[in-house]
Length: 251
Image (cartoon, rainbow, N blue to C red; front, side, top):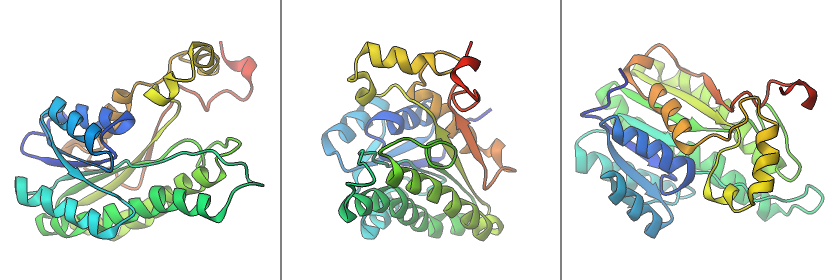
């Protein structure tokens, strides 16, 4: 099951973190993986590591997204899977947040998702098949966190976009779904130190932080042929983080 041989996948923001986890799992499942990222050094390194192909991609530029899709199709002949994963999460207190702070996050996380998905429609419609997976978050759609009002808005916006977009492409054999990560053990999180990580683990019922590959496995399922009857849905991958109604409920 979930075998992706003879399929091409484009993973945006695939150089590091969750995107790298998704790209790695898709490659192990047999997909030809194209990593699109603005970080050329990390992107090329990850592509070499998993046997993929790198294309420089700034998702805030519509032409970049179209060019990345075109390159994937030209190189491999088709594009079956798109994982719209690129995202940024700078903190800014609401009272101090500038218009530029807001625009930068919304342009990258929400407009970037729109540009990526829109660019993939032509080849997917032509072949009457496609799997699109958006990386959203629990922050915004389900929970909140101080300093992330712009981030939360972008992540909730992705899900609103997804549901209407899924209806528009359903007759073309294309599904659009989303994963919603909780706390993921990426390089940026590890840099906070073990005391910080221990505090985070204590609030999660499974008492573990997600690995990037955990999100990759969820994305791989939604990107598979077997997920053909699922569209417009979200899959929360958080170790039970949102379940407790108070800290006392965590065993």
